[in-house]
Length: 200
Ligand SMILES: [Zn+2]
Image (cartoon, rainbow, N blue to C red; front, side, top):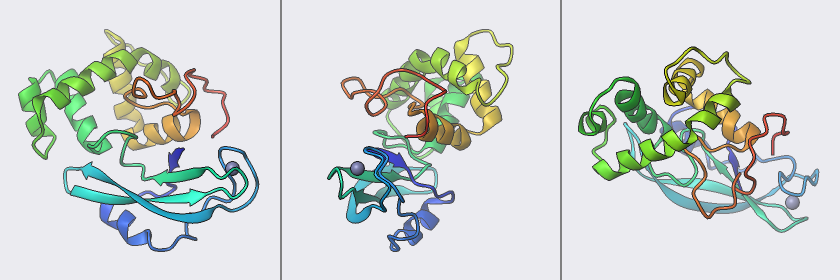
């Protein structure tokens, strides 16, 4: 299970603080809810493509001794299962869908260089997700008048701040900004949008 790393800062600051396993050690298991601090359980690595960083980052993993399942702490500037940082995806979607730029121009607005198809893929997923996003974000911010669900959701994300919105969506209600990948049991496990759900 992936949960949000309770850390806010740059990629470099994130990497610098990872060496101390106690600093952000979860004090309970988000899966079986056992109230016992989790055991540090190494790292896995993932790629990250950001405006100021393009490479591999470590992600810290913890083990619950009670249920024997692992929890990884994902930094808040990445979205689960996507290589590009939230900043890059936000810049691209705003340039294309709010700013009306072509996909090629939007790709240039959101460095580093990436394949055209990746932008198309984000747009497709965002469109499919926009109505549900707007409904879920209404817990944070008044939905503005907008010509369609895509504009409404983007305007709400811009007003809230993409990282703050992601923190609420993923950390609070297990909603993926671009939708959980097909085939993955949603929420990482659960499908429904339920703003009333307690943080998992
Ligand atoms: Zn557990």
